[in-house]
Amino acid sequence: MSIYGPYEETLNNILFDVEKRIRQLNQQEIDKHQPKLYEHLIGRVKTPTSMEEKCQRKNYPLTVESALRKCRDAVGIRIVCNFISDIDRCLAILRNVDWCSVIKEKDYISNAKPNGYRSYHLILDVIEDYRDVDGHLPGHFYVEIQLRTIAMDSWASLEHEIKYKHHVKNPERIEKELKRCADQLASCDVQMETIRQLVRENED
Ligand code: 0O2
Image 1 (cartoon, rainbow, N blue to C red):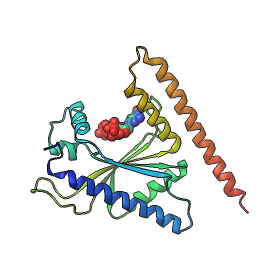
Image 2 (spheres, helix red, strand yellow; image 1 turned 90 degrees about the vertical axis):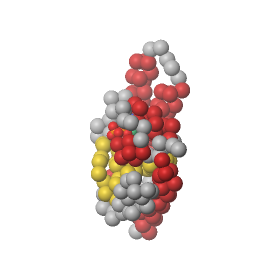
Image 3 (spheres, protein in one colour; image 1 turned 60 degrees about the horizontal axis):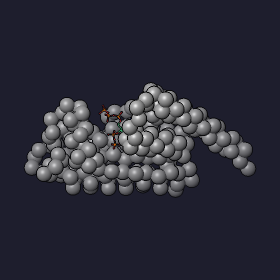
Image 4 (cartoon, helix red, strand yellow; image 1 turned 120 degrees about the horizontal axis):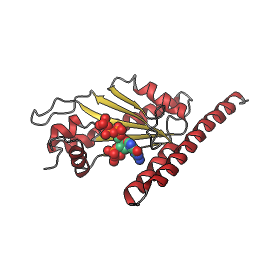
């Protein structure tokens, strides 16, 4: 049995439900003639192998408790937005829904990681009563939400690709270039926001 014990199906159900709810939130915005909340979203249940690696990296025992409680990203959803202000709208909405509570926020947009990584991370405690299996764990679970612009997402994907696929002898130069690229993209995000504002102010 995997590190998720009997909970693998539950995790897939949670992913399905939360994705559906986020799509509904987007539809509600569109119905109110607001811009769409996001460009696209992508969800995954972390593979058991990847979760085991994470637990080992963090020196957690390889147990269901570690995989579902100490780590809180077994279920993850990335929401990729067009504009920074859309991330703010998503945040405001998610903080107010009744089917979860936001228990942790990490703002890597205002405080980018030293390598240039930008994204806004939330941990949701999904309150809905997912069925406990064998009385092991109480019936609520965590979901990690990552909110990013398209530009931030492009950078993170490429950086991930470069970091994991290639081993270079002197990484400092590459890291410096990646950071420069991240900062340029961040500046583009600010410019795009300004352009959106200008369009709004000049609409007929
Ligand atoms: P995957 O496959 O994307 O899930 P914690 O200490 O537990 O509160 P945690 O989870 O160790 O926090 O770290 P954090 O900072 O919240 O970020 C975790 C996730 O953010 C990573 O998940 C990545 O998805 C993403 N991330 C963080 N830093 C970087 C970075 O420098 N580059 C890229 N490309 N992504 C980053 P996983 O588990 O690593 O992978």
